[in-house]
Length: 192
Length: 136
Image 1: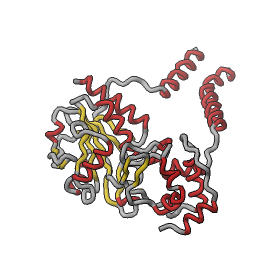
Image 2: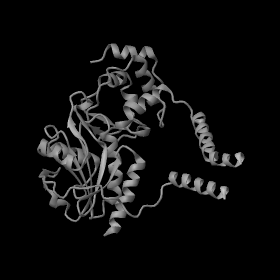
Image 3: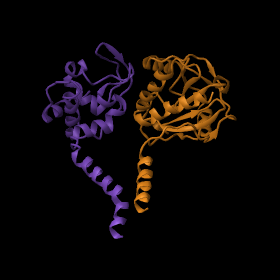
Image 4: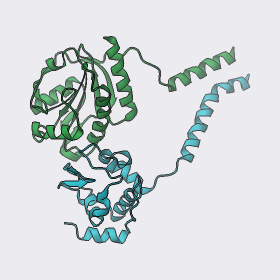
């Protein structure tokens, strides 16, 4: 009996250490009431309607960010490459430095990353509107003169489903968490 | 009775042993590598591979040899002008690292100059200091 208990105990510990295949994602919030009107790298207007019936992943960055942004963009690029032929999935990166990051600059940045705006939108707009929408996604983005680059922001990737519900947060600077995001996108695609 | 209770601790003992083996088998990183990972890898990426045409690579970069005499100042003062590395033009601004000591700069440069396929001659501390004295 004791041996059996020990065996069960051991199994629980081991299973806590191994990643298990997920088939259901939690609902962590909803962004259906978020209103915004931004401009993409192609000067196209981007509103909540752009994401109607789409699964999307969003993040916040700025092109002159000297800290985590390039790593986040390298990880997001992996997500882009995996889903670039899937019309149900869109990536959305907001600049938090719209004064500097104009449409022209975002177009150059996107071009240098080699991405297509059909599947990865880089948007700029009114600063307050961008910071407000960050709050809806429940990630931090604000100005802070003491930080390198002048802004502080979360490195999170946020996963939104077709019903505009938040289904996951991932550290966009980590390869393993980005792998998990890609798996979770597949889970949402299977939800239909 | 007492012996059997010990079996509950077995998983923990295994974990501790594994952790200790991992800690002691990992070669301690040299200082240049540690600086690179903390301060450079965010942009130039792991293994110095850069990011598309946004951020230039350091691995197998012709720039290291062509502009060997400018490297210390670039690390210390950052860079705003456009650069061409392996035939590709890059214009992303590089931030300064004013707080780096001369030794930090020598260590991180020598890590870059001798890794990921780079086989440049390391810079001496004296060469680094001479370069720094005449930064633009």
